[in-house]
Image (cartoon, rainbow, N blue to C red; front, side, top):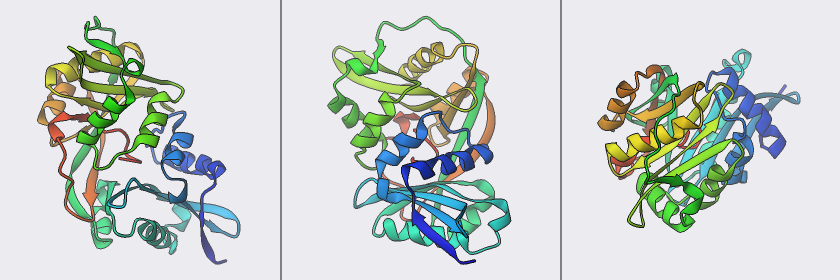
Length: 278
């Protein structure tokens, strides 16, 4: 039967989350609705004879930048044309954008053939969360003006993502903190409950010391549980932070772009927001 590529409905996101879970990506318990809100036109599903066989997301943050995620086809269809058809549909939606993705390492050559250029690796680390004394400058993020949060986020992400970020930081099972000094926001982060344990993302900070205080504050919410931390290798201080807490590497991805890597303040990025949406 012919393969059809259709735009996902909100209900179809259950399939995408299920596929992410089966691939071992450990999605958050409330990711689906939040992800979909970022760009309802940018989620696609492949079907054969009415059966879901693959999916992809292509979130268009601006006319200049988009991000691909949830790119997976069920094992028995990986020799078919489903993957190529999904990639083409996603590319069409993001036409004209510099497109980013976090690809599995053993598929880098395939992504290169689709026009993506390797930039750097992101590593996922794991440990068991512990409790720490809370620094006096670490406060609830919802006490900070959202405009200030959005402005700080823009230093660490290639486009403004106000709708997504507002929903992300307010979703159920998300705990978010800020570091404020003399009325100025110097970093923020969130930790959310996932299928297994809890995952920090993002964690942005002006300095290693501030990142450490935020990490400890977020860890307090999840003490005794598995804690995951997705770190860009180009931030050497972030990599040092994982060693400080004896975290072990779980797996890595290749961050790739169809153009050059965006100019960001990478020294502020201690943990990316998600492998699926950047």
